[in-house]
Structure formats: C-alpha cells, structure tokens
Length: 485
Image (cartoon, rainbow, N blue to C red; front, side):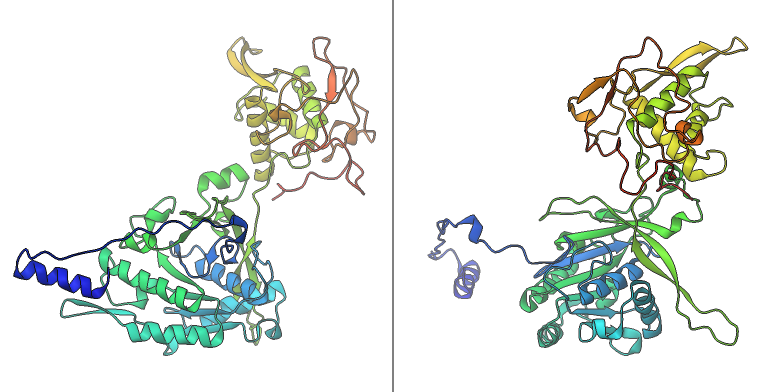
C-alpha cells in the first residue's frame, strides 16, 4: 500500500464514508532451485550474521568485555582463538565502547594479544576502537518534551563510516548508553533496535548490542534476563547469554568455589535461524602485561580461553570397569559416599585416583559410579553390615559385557552388537596405575571372574568411553588425564 493510498484512506475517515478503491494483490511464489539460494552470510561461527543484530546479555563481572576482546581479535586475524570459525578470512571489527576508557580497553585487547601471540601487523587495518570516555559519544535516540525521536542523520553517518572502512562487525557496548530513552519503553526500544537492523542491512555487516541483566535476574541468565524492555531481544536475530559456573556445577567437576568464578558459558538463547548449539565454555586465564616498574608487579588481566568440562569416562576402557567390578564383588562396599567403606575407594584404588586429597578425582569417581549404576553395571542392595545394621551396599548387577556402562552417547548403549566372546580377560591399557599397572604386569593381579559371571567380551572399536587399545606411544601406565586439579 503506497503513501497516496494511505492518505486517501485517512482523508476518507475524516470526511465521511465515501467509497475508496483499495487494491491488494498476492504474488505467486516463484519456484527456485534450492541449491541456487544464497547461503546465510555468517561472519563468526553461528553467533554473528550479516544484515542482522545480535544481543549479548550478561551480568556484571562475568567476562563479557574480555570475551568481546577475544572475539574481536579472532575475527580481525581470522584465527579460531575461541574455537569459533571466522568465515572467509579476517574481518574488520569496530568496537564502540561507551563506558570504559582506552587504557582499560587496551588492557583487554593487549592481554589477549599476548596470550594468543598476536602482533600489531596481524590486526593492522582490521581493528577499530572508540571510547565515549575519550570523546566518541553515541546517542541514537532522544525524548524531547515527551516526543520520541530517532536521530536518523547519525544512523546514516554510521552507515557511511561502516561502508567506507568495509567494517564487517560493529560492537556497541553497552546498548543502554547509546540512547536517551526510557529503557522499559517497549515500543521505543523496538524502534531503536530496528533502526540498528537497518544499519546492519545497509552496511552489510553484523551489529552487536551488549546489554546487562536486570537486578532481579538472579540465577541462570536467559533471554528473559535482559534489563528493561523485552523488545530489545525480541528484535534481535540472536541473543548470546553469559553464565558464570554455578556452585553445583563446580562441585560436580571438582572445581574450588573460589576458582569457579573464572569459568563461564556462552549460549545463543534464541537460535531462531540455526540449530541450537551446546553451550561453549571459557576460562579466564591470567596474563601479565609486563608493565610493572621499580620492583612493582605488572597488571594481571583476564583473558578468555576455550575450556571443555572434563569427561569422567575420558581414557577409560571396558577393562577398567571389569576390574572395578571385580574389586567391588570381592569386598564389602557401601553405596553412600560418606561411608567409611564407600565403594568409591575401591574405584580409586583400581584407577589410581586420590579421592581423599583431590576434589577433581572425588567428583570423577562420583560421576563414574552414578553412570555405571544408571546403566546397570552396578546396583544398590540392602544388606546387614558387620554390626548387623541394615545398610545400602554396592553390588555388581550385570558384568561389563551385559550392561551398557557408558553414558548414553556410547556405542554400547546404542545397541551395537559385540564383536566376539572370550572366557578370559582381554588385555587393555590401565592408565593411572590400576591393578595390573601397579604390579608392573598388565595381566598381574587380575582375580578370576566369579563363576556366575557372564562370558567376557570386547566392546566394538570406536566406543567413545571405552578404548580397548593403546594409543601410539602409550605404555598403559599413564595417568588418566582431564580431572587433575
């Protein structure tokens, strides 16, 4: 409907019900070859897309400025610094920060450059940084005498600058400082964000609006945690949310509570144009800028680096489980971790772990026992202890060839048939100084399987939790990696 038609309709409402002819036409869809439709113009992983706006929502102090500095350097160099792809080579990135001065911004950028070995030449012509604290203020919308007004000439000037330098990504941090409008006014915030969308489209770039969570947004950060008007995140293509590691997560992973503040996750909480990605985890590493003088230490600045939560089954084999089952079957072990005769001590002895001195080892054993019990490698049964008190004990349920002892992702759980049967123990690595490794012989110390046990078999190759062969260069005596403090 064009402007002339709209004017006639408005005039008709004022002067009376005079008939006005209005034409609306539907356009037949033109069939297209799907292979000829242009691919979505992703810039960075599946987080940033050209012609669109992405919001980044995080509470204060989690590490968003640090993460953004790392993202900017990754895109400017074209390197996968944070385990995200920068598509089609290095990009030009413009950081427009409205709350930090250049010294603080430089600390974040230079510490990341030190951590990842990036030189001045690596980013020459690809990184642009401005600070409102240094005079580069930004105000895109105002309210004057109660009247809302978008400052369109400023948007146009931004488009011109983006186009002039071929900027691929513009980061505005924080969004709340980029306008003078009540942040709870949904209709007005919607107009501002959509104006940024037009900027992204006109300059063929990705725009990132960084935003804080509300004070009431305690607990897990989601798209609904954003401060102020909901229309901000509604109008964005994607919303990346940052969450610090929770106490419960730290306990499961054996991470000290003081250290957990160094770990945070990032996830797209909208993912309305791409498949939902699992959360990406990062750790804040400390980097010394080397700017100390006269015996004084330099500044230690946090730098985001990719981090993967340890898998309790990493480097374990079917034979590890079998030896644990033997140890449990031959002893009398209680199921609860607070008991003096806890079954976890038997697991630790077999795998060479220290559940008394290392939180990470204890958390790992708890995870192993829970998963093995869930998958029926073990069961909990009531028995009388030596004092004739009824207690819960751990017992073997199904031996390693009968029960899936891996997490649900394992091949064994998916119904893959076993390859062969054998009445004897198949040799396998025992990393961590298990029963055989402690004796200096891979077959030493292996008790005979109980007569009631089912025949022993070998799980198929490729099972991600059980690897019954040594990797190149391994001896079988290596410590099990991934969970040491």
